[in-house]
Image (cartoon, rainbow, N blue to C red; front, side):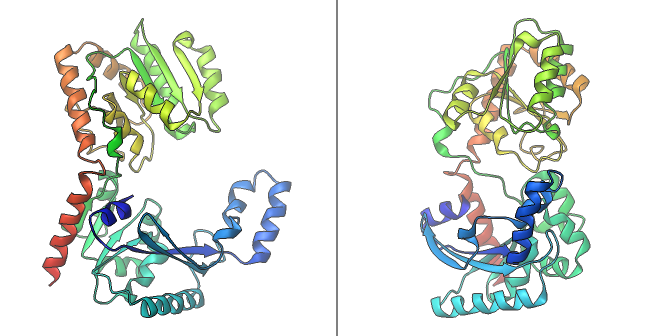
Length: 376
């Protein structure tokens, strides 16, 4: 999404998509074993993929030039072989030379293998944009860590990730890079909330989202007139359904399954309070979407949204999965004055607005320009 935003601002953007590819024999064997063993299903699917993306390719999307470069790999989550990297570098070098690609800035996403290719752009300002899965590589792979240390700027996806990255890098180089929210989400006729009666959660139904904890918290809170809508699907759906059926608030809870994006936003706009106290959440764009809808939003403390949501200012924070703490928080919010809740809802809306694809890319562009000026 940032690439599109940069193009709209008159910049030329080229992406090298380094696509891993496993040997045909491994993919073939994996496809057979998946039909035999459900236990192996999750692991072996790492070897499978759409055949259409298993070859080098070039295409343009939203004004962004994209080169897909295949890099052979043999072990999921493992290192690429030296030979595979050399072959991929030769292909990239050919593209760079033939297309006369001379970037001012090179942003490496995903440590493995992107960091191994930044040396192809010696004159560019090097920026590292790690993902959650990169922490393991930075911890275990000295070579990747040393390359990342040479970057002039490190883009963290959340305050949690920023704290993790600070154990490897100079904290002064770390800059927050939040997800973008489409500006179209921000209605001119927003209704700021003054009470909490309609609760909503939108997520994949897996245990780490702690939806059962939300159900228990609402039961403990003692609220009488309320409803709780759960939107999404996933492997924990039946478990959640069974828990609802046994709960004293079963008549208040509605498991709606997957809905279209339009239906989700419609229900967010009519809800009062969005709750998701999940574990290991890198960022969670759905929080920002809820805030953009005017919902009073409750997220997880010390997780990805902590830092965007400031407890008691533009939303509320709760320890991940802690039903008793969440129940106390719900009781506290329910007893707040209408003026206080309207201030929270309003602050949440404008916090989200600052992360819109209309405003936030300018903040990133300004930071990148500052880094380039420091280097010259």
